[in-house]
Length: 566
Length: 73
Image 1 (tube, rainbow over the protein chains, first blue to last red):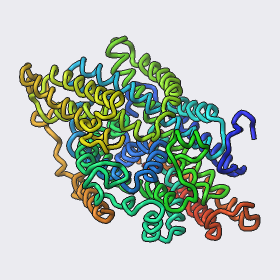
Image 2 (spheres, one colour):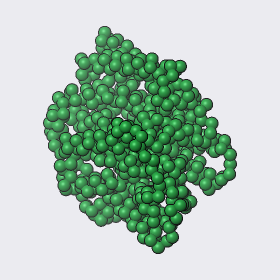
Image 3 (cartoon, chains in turn yellow, blue):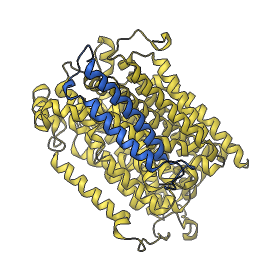
Image 4 (cartoon, rainbow over the protein chains, first blue to last red):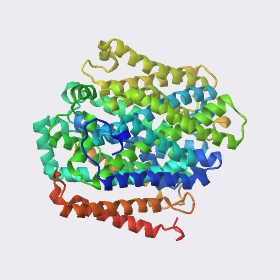
């Protein structure tokens, strides 16, 4: 083994030659795709919007894959070990209704306005100040998220292979920087679709073999009841009281904080995912893409949540929080997925499993980087620094900002190590930036009386109040009883309620300020707001090709899943 | 499906599944005769053999169907 990446850390497995060949082949293929697509990324529309020519399937899978980073794979597998099946809420009520809402209600306004970004929509609807505020906060959040993904990846390679953490970060981030800088959003999207397939190919065997070993779902539940508690396998029935479930959360936090605010905010206003849908070739494809994504999203718990539960049932050792694991030399919650991989997979399969985790990292990071590049170039650089440069200049700026964005992300990768669960940290970020943004965008799209001043001050008040509540609880932990409505609430519950309050504060301030300021005319709002925008009819396509039909199908399956695992 | 140029994304996916499937299948068949020193849980199921074969077959189908020049969109 080459000394540079052979760290002294203990490792779960040793890669064979065939495993290394599989990993190296993956890196070669994603770089080849980037090089191949460089020829199709010459204009701003090509580089930042993938030419707006993606089909619903490609946009939909990319939409989902950009979210399915190694952070998702490892973080939620770890969360399901820690909190049980409650973690599946983030895939079902915390995703499906929001994705359907995006496709059916919000996508027409994004698409018809021809905006290139969510901050771009705010510029059209509320003016430059709102765009500046949202684009700066988004850029900040994006590089932090990118750093989290990087840390997740380095952690996998350190734990599983004993590779040096710096080497892992360097090789993976440089690869992402190259293929996104070369091919822009189209390259990111194409690689995300490839990565989506590889994630499933590499991760699907773990739940299949795990269920065989555990004796099926009934055997799994019985083992968890012995190793932890029967509450770990119930989705809703333990949410009546804060201290009746492993997460310390009440059903109102899940339904209103997660489902109505954080999830809807994330899936409808986080430009990282919305950008993929904006690349669709027409409005019907743009509406179908989130619905296709929702259809696949419902089954992701099979490769993420189930392995965490299987770890709880089958692993001989007890996993622990990150800080405790570092102090004692044990294994942390976040290591459950690699531990399960090492349990079942031999040469070849192990290489594919590691490739799946690397692919997850790259799709998550490329998603963040390409979104950062667009927002930086269009909404910060062009809007505030250089307004009248040529299209070629902005493409060049996009390529360079890709590299700079990756470099900044590397710096943030080390910041996340102090958090006991990666996902708690992510949820805190969402409550700062996404929850208030959702209120602003939703009011902007559905209420034509909302004014520019209302939008800006509402967004500022929502973000400021969220950060203030977080700081309040940090300085005085007893404040938790006010922010999260219970002294028993844990980090996840606190994040849910903080998101809920910040969204409500944003909405309240937006409405209050709007009522005392002058609104735009209907002519100015055409294409931006419900009631003054003509939505194209879909009467020319058959029922089987209409987005609402598939939304009903997905919604019905979603309901059945929640009842089955109640 | 829409292409980025003359090569479909599904062709790239086919190549990836085909190569990975062949490598996994080959390595797993080798293990039938040379079992690893530390036996894996459920090794008796030989998951790598059938999983590698499935990936290779799906990959081959995609490669043939989306090979550049056949005009699939």
